Length: 249
Image: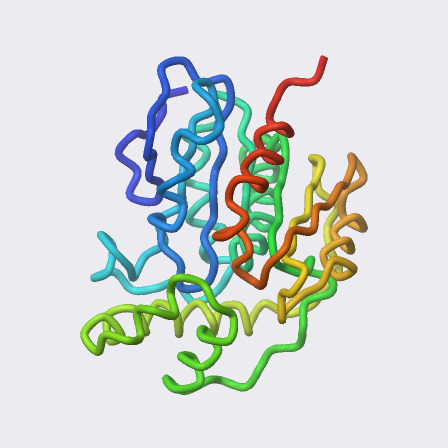
């Protein structure tokens, strides 16, 4: 199987010589691949980190955003299939966790490839997601991003940047709102759930409902912080993920 190193959907920040495993990172609503830049070489010399590059931002800013989580998963499954010559673990934060779930199902159904591990962060599982919110106007989107915290909120302080980033964030929020509760499909791999102890969107009990869809094993970790706990808690989070990527003996 040839690896598609030119994929516009995937960025490889720190290629490794002889990778044993790949970790695919899926950003949150409005997020970009650069959010995971510091993860590139954080997992050792044999773990290659890939990050999804959603359309409508950074190098793909001229491309239209996709309207649903399912469409994102469809496109990513096609792109990721070219990288499944090695075991693949998937980490998704917030919206990225829902994309990771849908991506996992598509990889199995369409290509017969199951990720070795699905890591979901700051997001309820599909059978328990909240009902869709009313559509937010621009000011509502800005207020919601500020409520959740994270680096994206600072972009609204610059009028020029605000106009660049708002379309992608607005489109992603609409995709999350359209992703409605339905019966969950059991996953073909172990699942780990992560959450900040002060997350205004989801608590540990809600994240632990991913266990309902994880017949091959589930574990969870709560860390200090809000919805973007993974910024301040980068080291303990990476340490935990790194330990889970070590081959079992």
